[in-house]
Length: 175
Image (cartoon, rainbow, N blue to C red; front, side, top):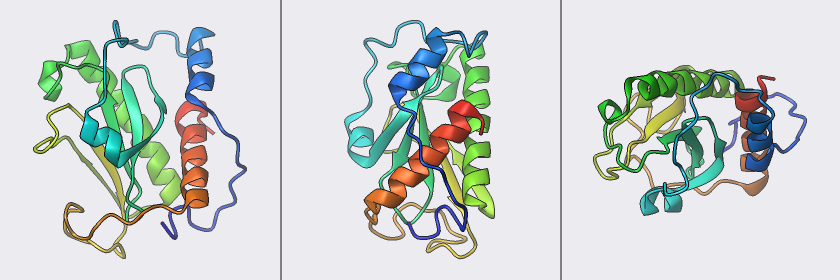
């Protein structure tokens, strides 16, 4: 994951899912759609295996793909029945776009990438999920898609934690 957060100094502070939930309960996200019933929701087993959970937005769980070749996030709407974006209610579709934009802006700012790839494919995992991938003209797959180019490269623990901390600050706190 070398170069994931290029030449910037990041003050590390952890904002856990509990911190985010407390912000929601305190009314810091008023007016944002909250999922009606997420208690029964579960993440697909393949996504659990391939990702690191970094927190929940009002509709989506935000995950980091376990592949240091690419700064690669997933947004998974917490709706078990959703396979396609059109399976969401219209207000949820709008919320999904808001959350994609929020996450994509944070990822672009943190990584200073050349291009963002955003896609909802789901050919192998039927649970609705949206890929947000920061691409550079120097990455191992450029200009091809990232899938199947190389075996996943495990993250360095310190680097991925710094990346996650930076993402949490940008996504949830806007700083």
